[in-house]
Length: 268
Image (cartoon, rainbow, N blue to C red; front, side, top):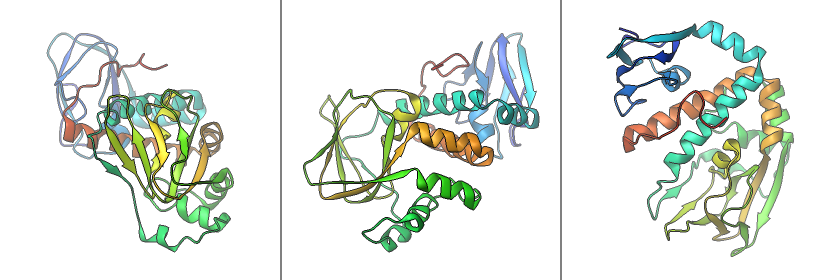
């Protein structure tokens, strides 16, 4: 047995040889092979149930305790950035399966409190509304909020075209965006949704055309500036990574989809 189900993962394994049979949402195929991390999403998400993994062939793995891994990630941000990019790419593949007519939003009472002028305090309220950065200190929140730029679009105005370079996302505050895929599917995004975040974090191009469905108010977050803030605040970066991990696991639980290429070498 490599990992015992029913308890948090405290050691990360990378298979060098062999194959393992796995029970858990993270590995819907039920199999983990060479060059794949075993339970990495479950570990970063802090899922108490963990995963259950047993060698189905003779296995050789590289392993590292979670505490040691966190020390490495804190000392070498490029490794942490690579994992953020990889998880964003993984989540992007799942999001691209969005059903026609889907509405994506994260409305809260706090958004309703925001006025028409988005000053620094209101921007801080917006970035702390969800669970992603609630543990972050105020200095980190101020640094993040100061990097946001206000944007407004009239109804019918295009935010971007399909295939355009990414590199920023819009945190939607007011209004709704119509998102048109090349295959004819359409979904909408509303207040609280970080439109364009996944492809920007993954280094991919826009995968849909985005048009303001009504008067739109948003905050622009430049991906390079956001990453600079994460580099300065390790706890914030780990909160962000944990949120992404939980999001992927939630999507996998619903879709039961196997995303090809999610291995140690995938996406950089």
